[in-house]
Image (cartoon, rainbow, N blue to C red; front, side, top):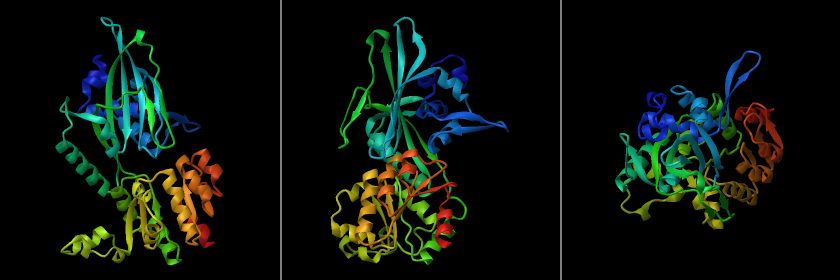
Length: 369
């Protein structure tokens, strides 16, 4: 904040420390603060992660004022398939000697994806090489946060000098197979920070999940979160409670070799979306026979396939969701349930039922009635 007020370059001047995190977070999303009548209370609008980052940065800087010093040029929306989003901003400050301005390319998303774009890291205000040792340390930090049920995002930055005569317009084209064509520099970026967000389960959800189990209803988690985060939350809400995962068994048993471990002994499992893409029918039967299941880092295609495989086994499926990437699975399910408060219009249009309070407990109460 002091550097910002002294007219020093905001991002280059402070990135690489706590002030750097404060400076970049408002430029990684488009959350807005609005005043609600009649009580005049302020409300931050946007998706949950962007709202959390806005609220964090607002404690230290005037977010609208900071954003006012930049102009948004281009956005690559978040995709559940690639697990990141990007924004290109133009600084309003020009270097009069060179007639150049600074463009900031901000990238935010899953650490394992964003880190692939980075070759440097900020350390004590300096850019230094992002070595394999540092990557391992960052990965261990992500796992530590995730083990507490926290959602971890990586934020990366690239500073590009831009001259008025360049007249370059940004574009990002993406095919269905995931291949892309773009003139946005998304390599050799600098890792600025890891941000951990705690989103505790609503009160009553663990009991509601237990009620479902007692009634013979399996509750599965399908999420885009890191598998460690997903498993931690699943344990908090009793989705994983009565059974052990293979990792649990391995941690308490001294197997002489990997072949001695018995996968069928594990009644709970955590499966990655990328692994589902290689599944054969027997693999699906093995996983879906488990009593407690968590699917992590899933895409829209993964979610749809999960619903289809459950239906193939003769099971009746209710699918809940709030995003665009949930809508194919919501539409395919026997009962599609969308969130009414924070759900996207596409998800609501695909649903049979819309929850006006976004509360899982309401589903259980409805079944009970």
